[in-house]
Amino acid sequence: MKRAILKIYGEVQGVFFRRQAKGIADEIGLVGWVRNEPDGAVKIVAEGDEAGLKKMIEKCYTIPGRTRFVLPGIPSARTDKIEVEWQEATGEFNEFSIKYNV
Image (tube, rainbow, N blue to C red; front, top):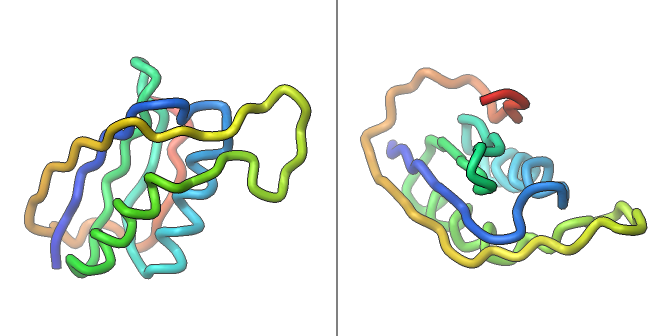
């Protein structure tokens, strides 16, 4: 098992990015968390098998934003860059959650 720490840059706040990232992680079977960062990025700490983590990274480039929500004034998500740090998994997580405070 591995841990991937992702820092995602682009139009990733205010576009339901965290909610969609959680859905992807749950679908793949990853555990960890996602949160908005003060600098406008989104940070994900996820643990699981390496193939699942790579799939999560790939899917973070294509998160569209609003999904089924049609809300005027909410733009689509846009991922410009993802920084990835690989570590060994710690096993500290039981589920994947959204953190609302830094």
